Image 1 (cartoon, rainbow, N blue to C red):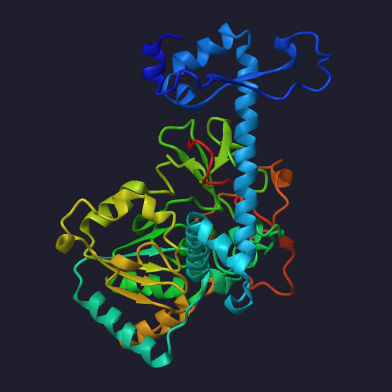
Image 2: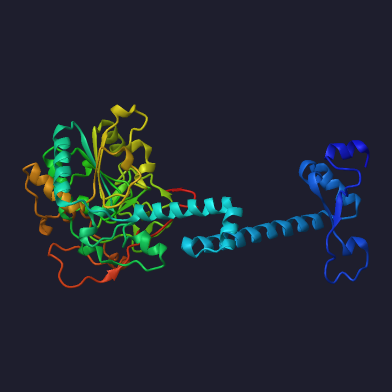
Amino acid sequence: MSPLCFALFGLRPQEPLLTEAAPRPGSGGCSFRHTRLLVLKGPVAQCCPLAARLLPVMAGVSQREVRKAADRRQKRVLEEQRARIKLVSKILQKPQELRTKDDLAVLAACVDTVQELERRKQKTEARKRKLEEVIDEPEELRRKVNLLAAAIQEAQYPVIYSGAGISTAASIPDYRGPKGVWTLLQSGREVSTADLSEAEPTLTHMCITQLYKEKLVHHVVSQNCDGLHLRSSLPRKALSELHGNMYIEVCTYCSPNREYIRLFDVTERTSLHKHNTGRKCHKCNSELRDTIVHFGEKGTLEQPLNWKGAAEAAKKADVIICLGSSLKVLKKYACLWCMSRVPHKRPKLYIVNLQWTPKDDVATLKIHAKCDDVMRLLLKELHLEIPHYDRSKDPIFSLATQLRPGEEDSHSRKLLTKDSPEGVASTVSGGWYGKGCAKGRRKKKI
């Protein structure tokens, strides 16, 4: 190479541009090209990609051999990094008084690794704290409920956002609690629930209906698919079931969509991206489909999702009460939060949940308690009676469409009856339970 090239590459004339790697086993020494690998050294490989490509070719070395050598070097670097992390981690687990001089020397030489492991530890501890359930002391709970009651009475347009936590009293598990669906699935355990036809609206469901009747709540936005809001006599015009209703199947070929409310869980044959229920529309004979929106899907049905009603309620709301929701999904629905407004014009947020939520920092008040306990105290403070659920007067019986002759065998789910359930419920798992995953999937419109 010319002196100019050496100057450009920052090398001394006597410094080699290439170095010989060890011969490959089994090469037999047939030729220099096949027994030794020339690898670029120093600034040439780093600063001059063109030279990095040309010099090996000039020396009779193939690009494939160069890539393999680079891969081997990268692999060695990763192995050394893993070994270093493992060694430092082992030392950090020792009590300080038991660390040797050699241990201290390793920690001093690997400051970056120590800092990275400390950051990982802090993140893990923070994640665990967010999963812990916290319960307010009785006196603190009463104080907070009094503040919530005052806020509802002063509000012009209060709205409720409900999550799975309001149905746990009906033996329907939530998703992210200690015994939640996703918690169990992530730990490799099976998920089963009591037959959902045995579930009845909880005290919280009935309190919400009473608040609506008293015009202290104007709309309910629910993430739940269990249909218990509908069965608690909450009018459908005041309800947005964003993730569907297990009792409703629809014909999307009819315009407008034709709904069929059933007395059984229609999701027996359905799952993620598979929504046909196996029954036909009574009018056009097209396939009926369920209304469930699984994790990883995007719901577009007008009803029972009622996104229009939810968005309009959010725009009018001056108080939003979140009951039993982790808000990890709801927070992604921008139209529900009015964050485009200046802070003092946004609705005041009141959260009732045992665990941390991503909206805690912007909440006016966070209540750590079970929803039934809060609602019982709330209605007492508002001087309202809690209505009793009467199964014989459940509105689903008057709304339901009967199966046609020949469709009786289209499902094996237990039918809702006006008589109260007796005995021990069988264990089944609805098609919408624990299905889908929000990560790694493109959302599919349904």
